[in-house]
Image (cartoon, rainbow, N blue to C red; front, side, top):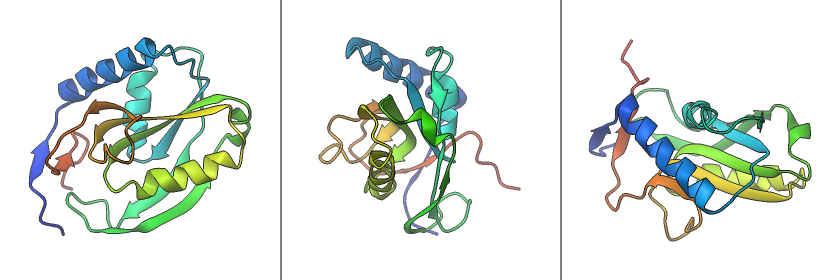
Length: 158
């Protein structure tokens, strides 16, 4: 376990953040061909974005960092587990989708992996960007100053 303060977010919060992210995509006139969620955290944002973005492909990257799936779990080094639908990346405008960017280790690994498939452009979207200095161009729903452990609505104790 870590000692971060926990911040609970609701589905309503995430829907609002997704709308904010989509507005930024529109404002920047980004033409996204492929959404690339980093499993598992990027999947909910990807699903919410597809409410707005029609006719996009999806390629999933499975990268694991948390030691367990419990709230406030310790982190390990990023570990690449696999990719699906890689053919949807070559010469495409891709959007890496992640729930949270903190140190950026997972996103760094995702960028390295995706570059091998030679996409036209790579963009990044996240609910929460805690690393604005490194990922200044990431499209984020929120860029908080104080790091907190975000407890998402799907994280329930079993």
